[in-house]
Image 1 (tube, rainbow, N blue to C red):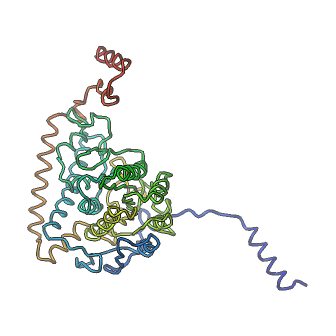
Image 2: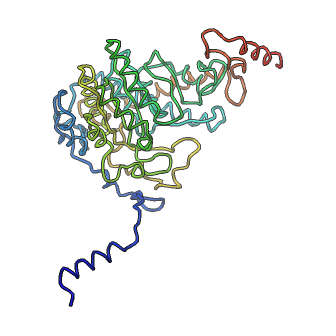
Image 3: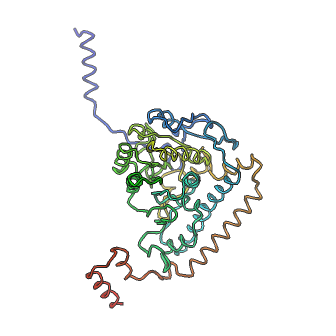
Length: 425
């Protein structure tokens, strides 16, 4: 007769003999099936505590698991993270966000007209870059991905210069060497973009370390998407930032989709991306990326930590990629077509406008007027830039220019090769 102990051992053996299987994360919505956004683990506006900038990384674990929010559904600013921003500053942020969105829309049309080879918009993510820039100082350096054009719009850079680069025409400041949207503007604190994802994260840490070694006062801000956190450079960046207390802000834009794969594939299902920072010994926060006030407040907090030699901060920005990954993508093939309209954290522009209306500092008429002014600015800039060629016209920098800007003094063998190329016409 089997004793109870024998039966337990037998049951354990039977369970142990069951075939092993892997867990493959799946999104909660697919085309034809509305997304269940409960996986986002939202928190009420104003509920997150605001620790002092001297807080130890382990003390931010709660913030890495929760969600820092300031604006509620009625546009009211609540809680300890609510920043004291003048209405004029809020309106400037709104203008930069609208400028970003309308510029994207115009350039998407230009791409469809074959004036540009490729484009990537940041629909739904405009608040993050604008608010973050407002919390930085001139001279700080951002190491962005290809969806942070709002960093440039907040610096009020020349739209004509940006469109030159998009058109790859004879006035392109990068001489046609970069894909469209892979900008490089040192004067705006915008490091040269790379199509190889995650490289900019470790570069930001290295730049911040160099700033500290030189005794400078400038800090760095690195950017990465949820999908690219699966790259080794992400983890290398965390290690170096933690060990050397680099004066850097490490931004993870969790817009839920990496091209066509859901964020859970990169590890965002059972734990937040911010939790990885805490585990690496870095102060980390999870933030509503569609809340301009929360984005500014947390960016300012992280910047102050860096400037006071208190080390790096990792920020996970919870947002949603409202449009396609790029002009070569069709998101309706892998997610519901109405996802952007149903996203529970809403539209960042509409939310800031609602807040300003509540303050008595905005109206529908002022919003319409601002949009007309910005649209006219973009149209004029595009018209001016197209005077020097579009993709369809083929007015591009000379092929001989590939030999320039490589060496301070061009070697003899490259001079000969350039002469041969010019002789061939």
